[in-house]
Length: 561
Image 1 (tube, rainbow, N blue to C red):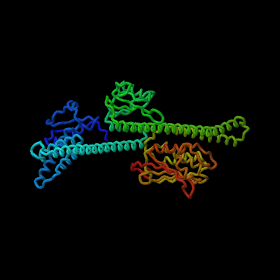
Image 2: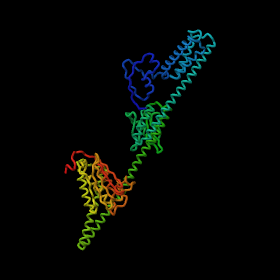
Image 3: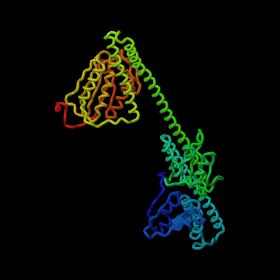
Image 4: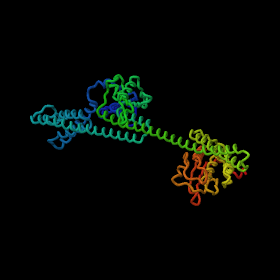
C-alpha cells in the first residue's frame, strides 16, 4: 500500500518449538512481498538461506508449517481425550479429533487438514481402539468406523479449508477494490498530468509488485515520463516495443508476438479520444494472474481517462489564455484607434489652421489653438506612457526600488502636477504630520497617485477631490476620494481590470481604462494593497485607498520639520 521497494529486517534463529508452529517474519515477507527487495541482517546465528533449493521444491508452499500445526492439534486432541477417559468413558471420543482437523484446516489450509486427518486416525486407533497401544483393530465394526471417520475428517477438513480460501480471496478482493477506490479518488482530485502519472505507476507497482513505466507522446515519439521504482530504465528494444504499442494500438513486448525479447510488456492507454500513452510492466516470462489482469485493466482505464482529462484541461487553459490575449489585443487596438486618433486629429486641425491663417487669425484664437495642441500632446504622452507601463507590468519587469520614501512629499508633488494638468479641478490634501517613512519607489508611487487623481477628475463631477494620508497601526493608508456618481457594486471587483471603462464621465474624455490597472500593478510591486469603495461619502462618490507597510526608522515628519 505504501509502495515500498526495499525492506531491511533483522533476523535470528528461532527456538525449536516456535520454529515449528509459527513462520518467521522473513519467511512470511519472502512468501508475500513479491517484487520487493528484502535484505536480511543476521546476528551470525541464523542459518544460511538457500533460495535455489527452496525453488526446486515441488511441495505446496507452507507445507511444513501445516504439518506441524496438524501434529500439534492432533496431539492436543489425544491428550484431551486421554484426560477425559480418566473420569468418564465416551463412545464418541473421535469428535475431538474431528475438531483438530477443522482447526488445522482453518489455520493452515487443505494440506494441514489432510495431515491432521491421517495423524488423527493413527492416534485414535493407537490410543482408543481395542487393543489399545497397537495399530491393529480387533472388531470389524471398528474398522468400518475408522474409515468413516477418516472420510468424514477429510471431507470436513476440505470444506473448512475451502471456506478459509474463499475468505482469503474475499479479503484480497476487498483490498483490491479499496485500492482501486482510493486510486480513483486520488485521480479525481488531480488535474496535473505529472501527478496523474506518478499516482498511476505507484498504484500499479503496489498492485502487481513489478516495475512499472508510463510513456507519453512527445514530438512524434513516446518518452518515459514516470516509472516506479524511479531507477527503472528502458533499453532500445523496450522503447521500440512501446512505440509499436502506441502506433498499432496493441500490446507489444514480452509475452506477445511483437518484440518478445523485451523483458517489459507494453499496453496502449486507450481513451475516448484515442491512444493517450503507453504503459509497461516488467513481465520476464511470468504472466499475470487473472485477478491481476482485472486490476490492471481497471487501473489502466482510469489512468487513460485521467491523462486525457489532464490533456484536455491543459488545452482549455491554453485556449483560454489565447482568447484572453486576443481580447486584450482587440481592446488595445480599440483603445489605440480612439485615444490616438482624437488627440492627433485635434493637433492636426490646430496646426493646419495656424499654418493657413497665420497672422490673419486673432491672437486669442491662436493662443487657444496652441493650448489645445499642448493639452492633446500631454494627453497623447500620458497614453503612450500608460501603454509602456502596462507592457512592463504584463512582462513582469517592474522592479520597484526599496528606497526610503517620504509619503507626504510624494503626495504634494503628485497633487501639484495634477493641478497643472487639470486647472479647473480643486484638490484638497490632508496628510497626518507624523507619518513615518516607507520602503518603496517614489517615482512609481507618484505615478499611482497621479493616475488616481486623473480618474477622480474624469468621474468626480464638479466637487473637490480629497487626498488623505494617515497611519493605522503598522500601515500607511493613502486614499483619493471624489464625490461623483460612484461605482455600481457589481463593478467594484473589475475597476482594476485592463481596459475597464464603464459609466459616463462628467463631460470629460472617457480615458483608456489602463490607469487603475497600472496603479494596482505598481502598488503590488511595492508590497502594498489597493482597494476601491463606493459610495464614499453622503451615499455617493468613490474612494480608492492604498496600504503600505511601515518601515520603522524612528524619524517622523514632525521631527524632520
